Image 1 (spheres, helix red, strand yellow):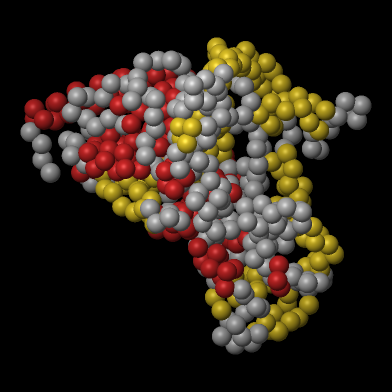
Image 2 (cartoon, helix red, strand yellow):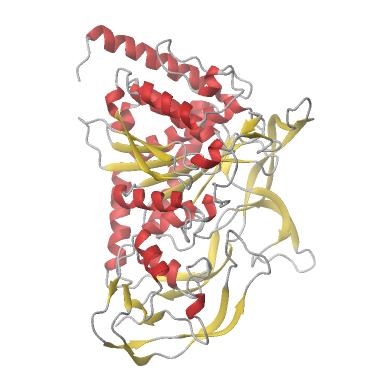
Length: 540
């Protein structure tokens, strides 16, 4: 679609107006952005940042973006439907005339009380529809999913996010099933998770970004972040992830005035293998969260692609949280473009390594990596008491004071085992087959008996908590591997080749020593007696 010269010039002035006003939000309590007069406004912009968007507001806003001068760069689609049948709206952003070897997916509102990602992605959609950020669109095909937990988003109530510095009413953390969607990536019990896995299979992004808000320790940062913390991520992907985060940290400070750092919390605890003196085992430091694949950033990176967690700071005002999240997404995309050749080569090398002759190994018995001594901004808040139906708020106070301390921002596997040639499951439960395929793991059913040398895991102990978690009782198996022995794999056995691109995913889902597997979530428990039902076929 063509545009007149005057229309294009006017649209570019609009772009500048939106861009400048948004970037000006680097400081807390900054003025609200002022979109161009003809542009749609988000719900926070319309309400002086007193409210967050409902799904109908997002739909109207995105539809209006399609009418903007470069609205043809946006395409709306559905990733699937929620538990209550609401569509998961995807926004595809693409400049048709550009070369786009890179792909990225940004997810908002997985926890529907953490609302700034949803609003920031709407602002970015508007900017793309006004012709902004050609430096990104020349090289990246982008997908935005502003409202992932759409049912939770509609369960609006005052106090869903106690202590958060506005808005008063937000959606709820869980989906309509009561499931935390950021604990569901392995088990995929929620239709939203299955829709996300289907989207990832069809789109295969080089970069996945998951937008959150932290209400943890009082620190001095506008936003914190993390790469995948799984110790089983391809080493090249892990290095690229850290490089992109280092680039983004510098750009956030230099170009937007935002202070950022690795996600964590202040804690005083035992070091896990770090060599702390026995006489003083408790140490105060900055600790990251978790390495397990149930968290979508951790699980996604096992697909040999970069995944990044974003955590705006809940005690920063709503305006600032949106601005920091928007800027972080933009910095990551710009950094991905700057490292385009390295990103493409790293992804290709990670894929190739999975099918090479040299076996890839799988780490288990995971603990925190050794600490690093780094300066961390220790912050403070003012607390505003609840009054007249308004919830209590914690309000960021100052920029924090730098304090050098131990920082634990990674995990390490104490033991590693080479992947086998394949795994074999003689009596595959349908739920297991479904989940392997949802995760993209290639598998086949044997059409005749096959003789193979196999390893079996002898189960010595099963550990389960007293209380269920996310609809399951997590199972931990303790045991040992028996010596390889010839076995007959009967017709109907599920055969999963480890030498495939998603071999790391398969290992996480199937290995008995994996701490976040389909066995963990009870899908193999009915077949687990004295032996674990999944056999290893050793590499030849």
